[in-house]
Image (cartoon, rainbow, N blue to C red; front, side, top):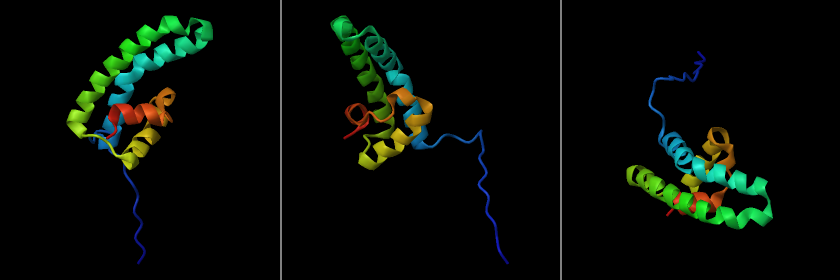
Length: 107
């Protein structure tokens, strides 16, 4: 007798750890990402005017992600990779920025 297993997704089930971390990370760094996009669109000549704003937003993101670390702990390399995969769909602008992810959530 062959048994077939099908995965059922319960949309009311609580999110997994990495999904919660990715969601929180997206929220914590949304303003920083938006400011980065503005700076890139403004061109290299105007980057200095964005520097102070970006520095301030980075500090806010760091404070916000400290709460995430407090709840879930620092992430190791493999865990950062798992979160990055989720970022690709949740907030693509923040995906594949390993150094920033490491700084804000890593050990």
